[in-house]
Length: 276
Image (cartoon, rainbow, N blue to C red):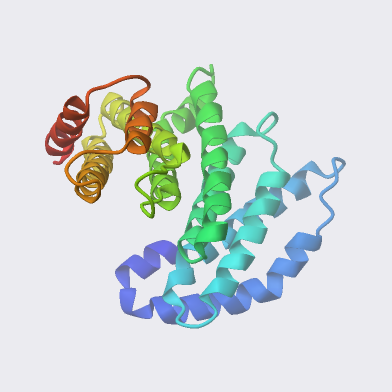
């Protein structure tokens, strides 16, 4: 409700965020201290739902606080961690899918505001959470229960978020300092980002969601543009050719030997064809 209201009254977002912070600071300690033992299933479900609602609202509204936005985000992540902890994917997969997705987005928001040293760890946590969500949703899509299948049908969102987080990781782990040394982790993250956006687009098309498919394609184009930029800069810095370290980086992304011309052409063609 708060999020919808802020869309209609964007000029009130700062006030709404401040009010939310006051509410969260009052009630978050109570929720975190709740007894959620196995003998109180109803209480556990209630606490998890409230923790998720407050937690996601905090993640959504933290950018609108000029001061103490980081504190609101911290409360949001703590509450979402609680919601995920008490809703195991093995027993309550539909709730886990929603809560873990929100927690992953919370970690991505924190990563965007933190220093490079800690950014990688936060993004890896976010990506791992989203992989678990995608796994759960794929299982739900094969369920006999209609409500489970409806949750599973949103897997295109899961893979889109995985793509965003892997793209963040790819850029965070790429090091342009030395042309003679290239961390291959960034190439692997670029590869996973491409695969995730391709999967998101395919699943969105299968669900007749052209808007989501187009968004996935546009982000895929951004990944390819980044790869083209890396190639051109590395070749320029190397005096017209590329160093062995960057070629090894390319083969890591490509999954095997590939000509540099083919690599650049495929990335450029991908950027042009995916942009919508």
